Image 1: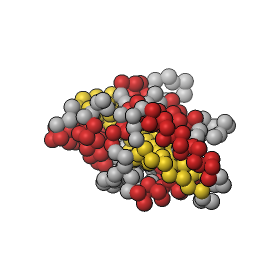
Image 2 (image 1 turned 135 degrees about the vertical axis):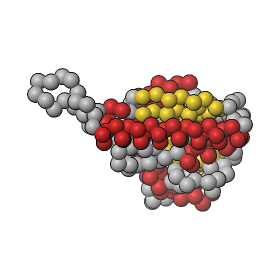
Image 3 (image 1 turned 60 degrees about the vertical axis):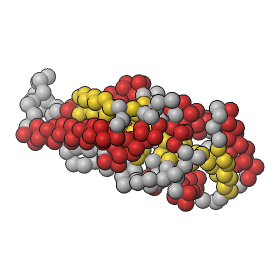
Image 4 (image 1 turned 180 degrees about the vertical axis):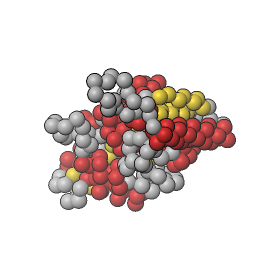
Length: 279
């Protein structure tokens, strides 16, 4: 199975680590990579300020400079990714568009198995929408799993699947199988419960049996802890030297457009390991 990966690059997005990671994984999985660059010019287009005017005022020199900077960032990032792929002998496709990053990524993602996104959570002045905002928008509607890559990640070994028996974790596990990313290495199914070892064992067993039904071997790990599930997942991934964490992403608020659940947010914010998410 050949895994098709899309590396998303947009204004202000971190790229070095995910570029290296995508290339390395594509080699191991006999995969292909598409560099998808998006420049959102609209965020610098000033609104009309003249009374009764429907014609936008011309962009000033600052706006033009910021757009030029964003385009340069995207073009350099895509060229870097292309060079990495050439050196590694990985099939590469380059795509560059203008518009809303999350809207364009959602459409383009339909043709791929996985979308790689950097873990930047604060805006670089003049460089557009922060990656964390785009991540939240993507997770709400993405047809494919999202891989959040922390800056500076080097190498690991094995996959840690955080499985709590929820619909989101079940979907994430199925997405792992469908994407072909299970081929990275040995899988450990981790179930965390604050009180019941029996519940944790039931959930971990269910994950292992699902994988076994698809010819994929996995071991189970049970944790009963009064720590938050997110903290246990982060700690275990670090202790095991995992190469990737797999988990479901979910939002609990019905009053606002979207918020990540507390466990998901904890893992994204504190994990030094790439996190494979599906809602």
